Amino acid sequence: MMHRMIPALLALGLIGLPLIGGADSAAMAQEATQLHVRGTVVSLDGTTLKVATREGDTAEIALANGWMVSGVARASVSDIKPGDFVGIASLAKADGGDGALEVVIFPPAMKGAGEGSFGWDLKPDSSMTNATVADAVKDVDGRTVTVTYHGQEKKIAIPDATPVVTFAPATPADLVPGAVVFVAAERTTSGIVGHQIVVGKDGVVPPM
Image 1 (cartoon, one colour):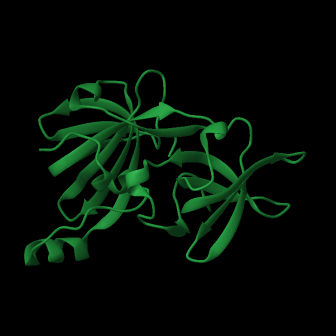
Image 2 (cartoon, rainbow, N blue to C red; image 1 turned 180 degrees about the horizontal axis):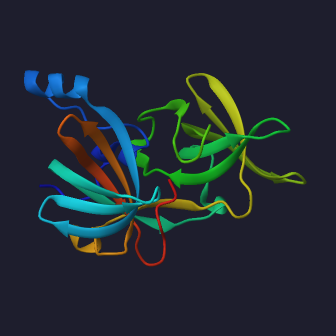
């Protein structure tokens, strides 16, 4: 099994799950649906991870061959520079435009991967935008980041309390009871299969 942070993490579920080869796997993929599990670790027993979810139940997750784990490190809006590739979960604002719920600054090696804007399940009606920063400004209306993807432009306001993080190394030893996790998984006919885990460390929790 691999337990290191590498570009193939595909943003740990912010971009998508890894492709699985083979006819049997293709059939399984047709039966599976993408799933994000958010909560705290109950236990890790071999390749079985139990998570107390934010919905109040306990999810038993079978970790797939080659499952990966990463941590998160605290960053700030001032770290966002033009040319950076970011993932921003946001909600439409009543007065127009989008307001950020969280920001992930991706490592340079992941630039362009999974580019686009799509529905996200952090909150009802939220979206995730993976895009390149065209401009980052602060004006009288607060902080606003302009991002571009597929020839389109989107302006997203970042309120002061918005969590901003980047990825950091982690190992299975960090998956201790009580640790906050975000798991990119699939719900299959045989249960939940986990591929990628983001775990909180040093007081920083995965905000996605």
